[in-house]
Length: 426
Figure (cartoon, rainbow, N blue to C red):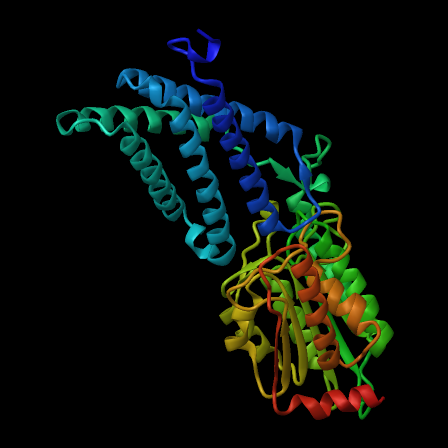
């Protein structure tokens, strides 16, 4: 008798198939995270270690459950099918998170989605046991209790959240917490300095007044885009001395005034006071986002996000006239219904139900920011023409990386064209 035929042992081939299924579940997790956060990450050694520990705990739970119902012969099959199901669920849940993030906005919704996932896995295990009707209740109850207990251990102690990471986002042991009191004490001075530096508007001369805002503090790409976009707008339109900058930044929290709702409202009002009828406002906001929400995230400072309705009200109250508004964020197209107007050209990095990509610490540009500003607008000052170039470039990059198209949007009001043409002619 060979080793593979010894009673009590799992045959070699089913065991290898079960191991392959576990590896497939890890690969599915990596693929799903990469599809959500975009390329540029790497495999985390710590994440692999946690994934191995998690898988070992799940297999141990299956051993206990199957031993209690006296069906150890199903161990290899149970491991194989369960981990293949987990792979499919991971892909489905990450896709759902990417396409419908509002479903994950509250703990109750997350618990409900997790409950459905657990029920599907329990149903698979009970089906595998296929006990006679009189034993079904006992077998199902045993497998359900053991499985849920195992999942509780896994979620509490072995949650795989760093299997795919971006190198620049690793936790810095030397991180210094932000002095929030000093940060808010400095806001009057910082905002006053930004406003005082604005050059007076020359009546009768078409000019561009600009705002560059970076909304998320924990990823430096948004602060980088504020600086780079301001430089490009100055190069193309001469707006350097008429540009206000707001940014949330953990690395350099007092470089610019906070990108919070109060400072945004004041910045818009200051531009509105200075904008003549022949002038153009160019407003650029970059951050994370969800449907009808633009993130102004600085956790330690207690900032609150900006809704589409609030932004529309700020724009209307500011007195700003003709404007180009560029929103670079996931789901930014959901703002169009609220802020589109006859005297505005509104450009968004994504359709209302789509994500955009490239938001990571250490990067110079997001994917849309690079395509629209660095590659298109730097060469073509007309934002309408630059948008067409950017759309093609974004589509090319997303196709190459196998990402769901973000589908950037542009809405041109009937009255904005002549203003744009005068500015561009000058």
